[in-house]
Length: 79
Image (cartoon, rainbow, N blue to C red; front, side, top):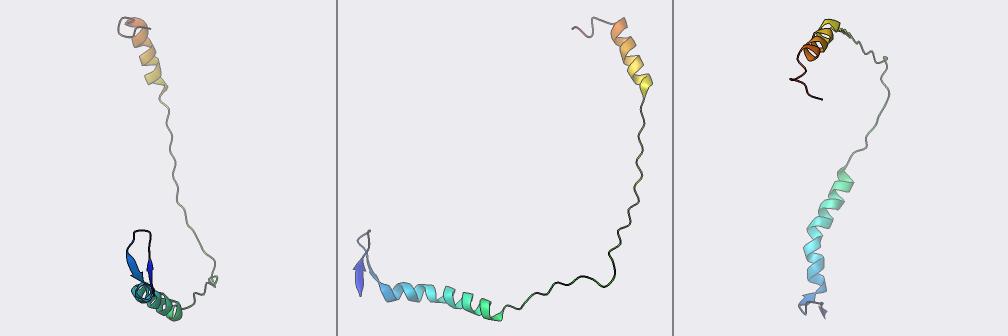
């Protein structure tokens, strides 16, 4: 059976089904051949070893040096 589409192009209904059949067949084969997935907890506990070393240093002398530089040279750092 031929029907007119909005673009005034005639289209055969069985021709559309034949164009889609490879995609339908591929989806059917994929669905039938897919296996099931099983997830289970491990027998032994999970051990995570972390060796973290955090070091922090504060240099107060630098801050004092900068303050002295600003006080001694106000023309370099206008406000």
